[in-house]
Image (cartoon, rainbow, N blue to C red):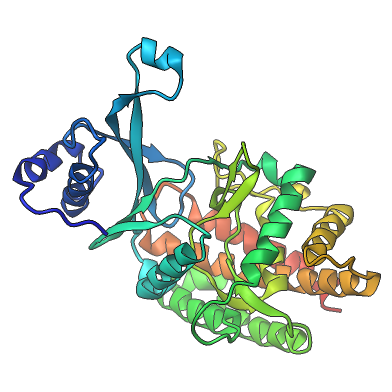
Length: 360
């Protein structure tokens, strides 16, 4: 973090940054910019909202530098480079889903591992992060075989990170805690419509099904949608970002959750609508799993591949319950423009549709 003294001029100018950024964040941004020798004017910042976030509000903030752009043509036109940061404003009700201090510690640890952006500063309801100069993946990218293989390899690396703290499986406690919260927030008619009273038994049944399956536990992202993966198109290096929901879990759960995210397009006209025709078929799943298992250098045998595929199929059910409950809670506490309730209904519908064939 950077703290700069005697910045009254910049602090006063922070008020001009616009109403989307809180006063404390604007002050921090001006302190950061004033400490950078290449920024032409710390008062002249531009705020650009970034789409696709459903838990937080995310903004790109940039300043012009005193230096010309990176190519000769830009210099002739008088264009200058920009200095960028990312501002993350925490969404309402986030404390119902995870401990923010735990998430920040994870963020800092990931940064030390070279796995994500650096933390530049914190303010009461958010933080400023290093801006990664890479492209966020699109929904279509997840279906590209080459990019999917890169994701599989990167995810194996992520799962093998040696993170501090207890290494116990979190998913069952999370499901029960979120179910309790959802019941407390929902009026009786809504709880009945969504069959919330039956979910305690469903969670218990799922946990028993998994009792012999999740011997392979790793540090999981738990929210590997396309918006949380960035690619450097020069080097083809991937960066996984946003660790709010990260914890130790069965690695099969993380893969299953990633497969479920292939049904979503959060940048469409109706971002809450899911198309499960886009869920990867068995050939796509096998390609992903084989790449994931072979990153250690050894070719996986057929039994190893099949066992992981079966675990992923069961974990897909858990993913539907997790994000169904997330949607219901978010609908009651979050003002972001997203139809959380309809999203939740679709996830629950998928659970009830798929369960009979998977848990026979």
